[in-house]
Length: 243
Image (cartoon, rainbow, N blue to C red; front, side):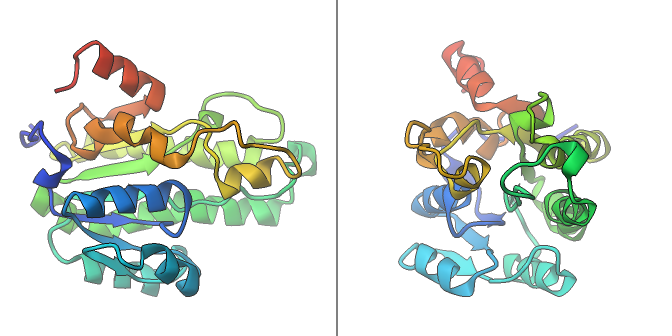
């Protein structure tokens, strides 16, 4: 049976690793956990962007690099240490932009999309498992509604996220001492969303910081493993199903 989680502040845990943390949801999560006393190891491809984004955040260790690079992944885990409470698989790519139909999708770009969005997260989990098991930790794979719904142009990205969802689903069945979540945060005002809709005004989308309250139960590992959207998480909180 999974270890009992503490239904309190996220400050009850200590060490997190977050990929893709120089902007968007990754940076929002890093800022949030840092503010609650966590030690957070983060990455992004641009060292300058990552350094600028995390400057002044307490307890944050920035390790710049590409998540598809094995040496970089091992450096991240070395920085995190042998006890990892929370692994957030956030780094991803949209793929082609503007979004093409599947009939016109460049298969080399598709391979790269899967390498970043699906293969690299799995490999990072494999490397992190000893430290996650030691902590009875939590894995959060950032997903998308494109993983479960048919949107024109979103076939490549959606397929990579659907595969990531299934990896999380099976991992939860195999690693029963962990909490494993696939989480759909919904549309947000991010660079990726801007790339999906070039030239369009996306200022009506919520900022990543606004979804953090809904994510609190999964950050604490307070729910059974599974796939959740921020809408579902908000409904559970409203119904009193989460402490």
